[in-house]
Image (cartoon, rainbow, N blue to C red; front, side):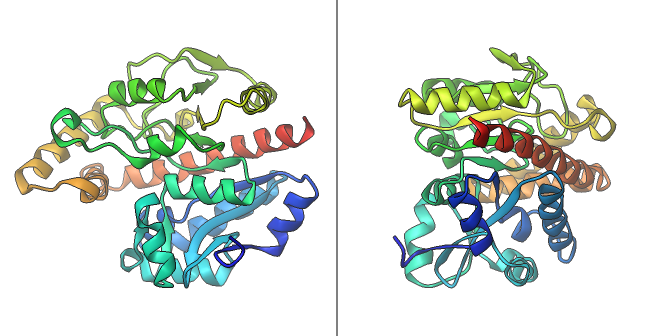
Length: 304
């Protein structure tokens, strides 16, 4: 594994000395927004993590190396290359690494690489899930499979609201993945705090999250945990506005025959256009919010 995995010395020192580390994904850099905004946001997220008392570990693939803790130059590289950088999920990993390519890691692959390095807490925007009409298309995100087997907690603003949220929750239940709401009993839907779907557990403090994680893994219950953290009220989008925008985007995607891995980026870009860019700002703010919560949970976890 040493020939493939490269841990930044700052991250390595933190892990060896039981200091809190929070993993961050790189798809949001290459595919989430245009350059140079993507780099600015990625560096701000790292700064925010440090400000909140944890070591950030942005994860990506550079020249075939699984990097845990990208340097500023490497973040700039992925940001400049943008959509030219392959979006790497579990199925793509061996190809990208063996060919010594650069790659941006999805939620699934960020979880996998985090686990290899020993990082237990990962902050992102939103997880993938079961797509609408999945009973016909079988379009189900690899994020859900990874959550079912990899011991990493994912702090997110719920699942992207372009998905079938009911089926996503059902799939996670089948895989034995707890979905825990931070101060909420309702699954947040990325841009909005509402979804109409209830969660089984409402958690009030970072310490309680940390205790649940430790207990789960101590019991040998392998797999991840989804920690659903609603976007702050002041940045949340109106539920009806975002729902109408998504429905309009889905109709256009069907008319154009857009399927598979092209679906999510197309829909998110259309929603951004329809909402005059407000969805992009909401996206940025919810990531910041998730990093803050992830930092508090990571600090509690290392104390246990």
